[in-house]
Image (tube, rainbow, N blue to C red; front, side, top):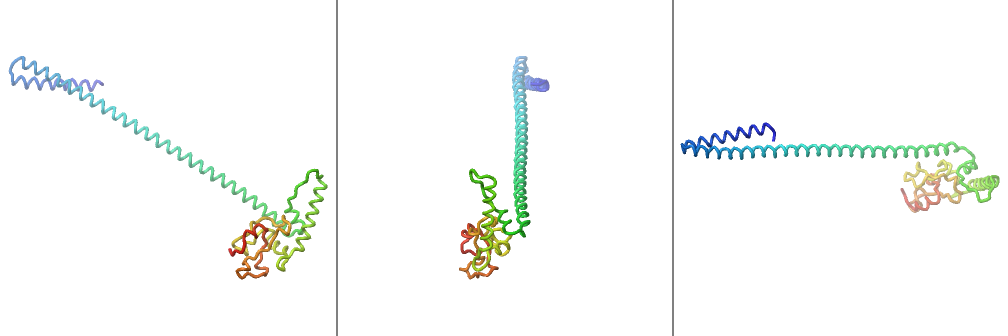
Length: 240
């Protein structure tokens, strides 16, 4: 209870006491009646003052609680906002990481493409050597390993030159595709996987009918594309 409430309570008490004293005094016109009216007025004033002060106290507590609730709501909203900002930063970081990874992959592919294009006019033996992936046997010396690789290159180069499919030189079709599996220029469905065919033995490279024979396709060169055996088997007799 602060000083203002106490002052207003006393004023109210005196005011009510005066009203009661006057009322009963006029009725009774005796000292006892006036005294009793003053006592009753005091009790009534005290009750009113206490009730008023209690009401103000409850109001003040309600305002404090409301203010506290509003502060907590603001804090919660601020925390939600911070959480959203953190989530956005995390999402942006993931996006940036994915972009960097994609750029790295594209760069690697671009570098491979440049390397493949740079040897496009090389002799077949060099293309086979570029695509060759051979491992050393246990106990192989460097000389033995290199001699075996040279023999593989020589054997495959001869087979590439002598390989034919449907009356066409396999080497001609493969070189038309820059050595890659599939010809997306002639076949928009892109059945090929893009692997480097010169890294395979010619027996693992097939000529595929872009328009399948079952659907009226011919054996002419423009209807042919070179695929690795896996892609050709998976494609089946499909058009697009």
